[in-house]
Length: 436
Image (cartoon, rainbow, N blue to C red; front, side, top):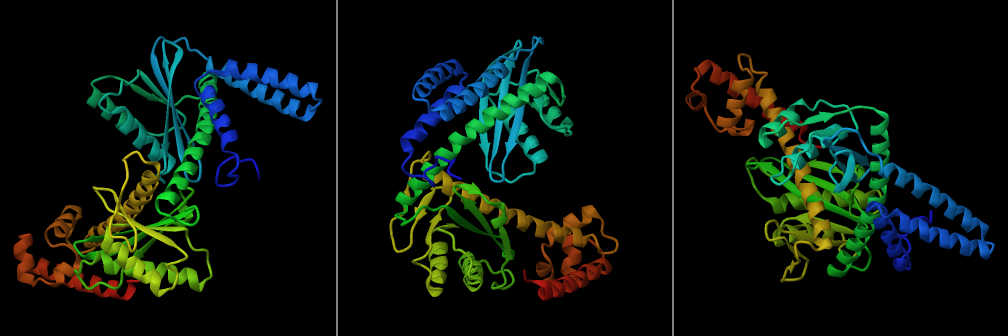
């Protein structure tokens, strides 16, 4: 479209982009009068040069800035402290704006960025809970939200933890609508700055990993299991440093034996399945693969790329937990970056999302086991939980005889027989359906 000044599209416009960012910062900080003065001067210059098209654009910009400034001086009669929380959602990023009012005057703006894929209602609840229960946070008398949801539980939690009495309110008043409009403007402007920083982070990552091209598309992988059972792999896709939900996948791992724990073997399977499919269907390969793990998992994945003869076409690295060391193939020493390094933060976001996705899918399978135990005649919700806790999965139960089941569960032999038989049936069904 030619409208984005980001380095991913027009790499020669860094100075112009910096000017744009400075202007945005003035708007976010409420320093609109300076921008209006600058526009007046530019309008006179372009009119003198008879560049009327530019003059019209400047006039439109001036009008928009005046509207923003008028919105930003909205005051309220209530002598209270009030926060207005607004979430601006896009496909890959949520911008959260908190406008803080004291005695009717706007005193502070707080802007956060969130790359999770929670639904809107869940995101509101999670953010409010985390934000207002943090140790140093001063909770206002009222918290206004832009969407009607049930906030009774989180209101109770905040009030109990902070020993206060706040309200979380949804109201469609004229004043509230204007404030939301201002929050929307702030969110969109902040998003431009954020995208610029993301572009710089992607460039930084390219340099650190010694890549030939920008890692515009990154695919991240992680493995999860329940004590060697129900092993799964997750794939998440990020584009220009932001989640791309259409590129998310989960895989049940078929190459491991019952109770076998081997993340490297599981990683080989998922990498082989993923990139054999892309090659067979002649689909585009990612620029970078990120493996959640260390040298072992990296070497396992890299061996598959070599077998497919695409190791020169895709860059690959691994990010180890805790120490946050980046590993590259054919290099003995890992790369240790500063915690605030933007390139490291991109990799961490991909790794953490892959980890979350794998664990969520694994937990879903775990919960399904619990729910299936409910199908045994005479087993209720609490007993089903106990079976899962004491005996484990179907495959764990197959290793026990009826007497052992009865002893561990403190139940009669008849019920133990039912549990054993049910586990045998479910294990047989799983063998028949254990594919994606």
